[in-house]
Amino acid sequence: MGPDLLILGLGNPGKEYSRTRHNMGFMVADEVARRSNASFKRRPKYLHASAESAGRKFLVVKPRTYMNLSGAALLSLLSGLKIEQGKVVVVHDDLDLPFGTLRLKVGGGHGGHKGVQSLIEAAGPDFIRLRIGIGHPGIREDVTEYVLSGFSEQEKELLPGLISKASDVIELISDKGIMAAMNQVNQKERMSAN
Image (cartoon, rainbow, N blue to C red; front, side, top):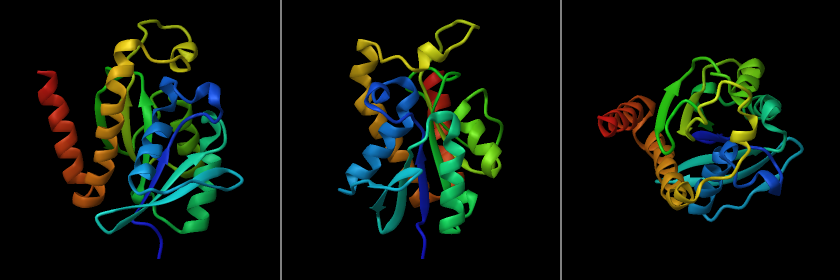
């Protein structure tokens, strides 16, 4: 039997990208695996670890491709595992949300995120997205430099708590289901914004 959830953290491979804004998905994937003392194994297109929470099994995945080719890893997984898209949770950074904000949604467009665009092109849009706000640099031009940059000193202090909170959301989805998790996470974020 396959995993209850497939957690796909988006990021870029390589040390030079490891602590950048665009690698929030990788950071959360690492934390979800760490909580289960699970180590990543290597496949041609991705790294994967088998994690568990409250008796539910997660397959935690980090693509080995660059961000804009993430769809190749998802296609490989979906065909090999026979897992439906409704059990895929994609964790990624989001420019359009203030730093530290979490949002859950199912389906939709890519919002300019090249990794999400690649996933949609490869397998369609019907996966769960855990969007993690990284803030916006306030420019209309190319934001590549910003998303590939490191965090400010203030953000670095908040980062461990944010990664932990995002990992808690994965457990919430597993425990309560996506609709209840969306209501709880998105409602809490709306209330804290008021």
